[in-house]
Image (tube, rainbow, N blue to C red; front, top):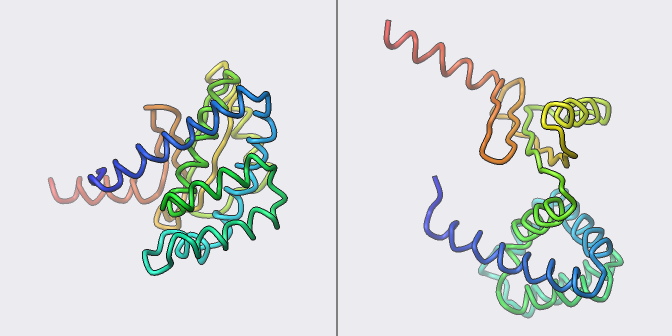
Length: 186
């Protein structure tokens, strides 16, 4: 279920992602912008502390902008990427950066004719497993597939795959919930 605040946040994330995408496309720097967003996304994915600090209302926008400028420097983002991060922080949207990165990646994938598959598993998938899954999805869908993997321990085992509006759920959690429901009905 999407709350009103989450809907506003994702709408803003899409607007920011669209602005960066359009600017990168117009200036023929889409590949560099994608590399910047990949690096930024990886930094946010690796650090729960970074995600909390960026989203925290305790830190002022200027403090977040300074911290994110240092991060952009460390990640060696392009000037466009650095400016984008600075504007985002200055406008009070630092906490939306993970969602902006995800939206940007979707726009870039769609531009290339690829589809994005969101995969969640109880444990981290190995590189081999991800490659095999990507190959299987490409064969099944007949298109290039960009995989975004996430670890969700609450699944207990198995995985979920979401491509567009289609969802495949082979998680142990869902199977146990089904058995629990069947037991209640019996």
